[in-house]
Length: 65
Image (tube, rainbow, N blue to C red):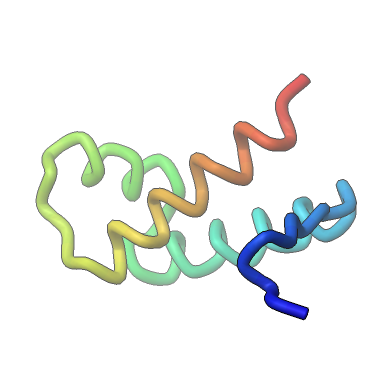
């Protein structure tokens, strides 16, 4: 069966775990989440950091009511 038409549904627990993992990595790279988000506003980051910012915002959006 081709997997290109499948949709993955994440539980809230999985999303919370992923959010914590992404935040921990942003904090490791920038010292704090606040500093990371400030850096994002400067548009001064590499591709890996861009992926982390994108994932952070996606997970936060999915967890919002």
